[in-house]
Image (cartoon, rainbow, N blue to C red; front, side, top):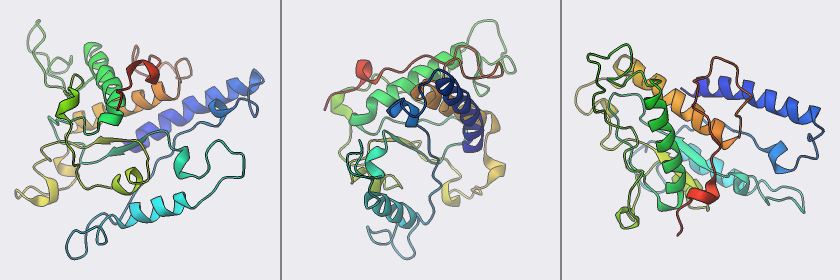
Length: 251
């Protein structure tokens, strides 16, 4: 999933930066010229003995602390590496069939809504392979009702919980980083082999995995304004500029 997104976005970003250079907007292009995507693989989440603030999230805690103390030169827009993160998107427990991912945080519900809108658009275009209405699965002419991965786009302010799942985002969020947490609730049946189902690649639903890869890639592409920089192989109609100022939830 991440490798697909990295490969696709790298090609489009390279084309965008080359176009900016050709137009003379390279080094003097400001934040837009410097904006990029970083993929982080965090390890050491589980506790050695019992889950506590000290016995868990080892990799995430170490990296968040390091980036908090990695300072940029004076007069920089962002004073340290941590503050330069616009949005931390955490992908966890994705790949099982029929996932339901809630909107966990009010402060990033605007980003959740943007991704949910993308999901609806991709489904309507027939790009979701796990959908019963995909051409490979369609049983009748009329579209069947289908469950969404992201069903809480219309979630009201009063329904956001005051607590969150303990996951790798916690050390970053505690330092003020905005987090979009993509983790299903309930967890998949294969989680930690709790129901006797091995937590391995054999129990992934590959259509769902491909759909998540498509959705996450399209979301990042909107964030990076990559419309027009993809080759013909990308899903048609999946792009569209994301405007945070038009959709962001207020605190």
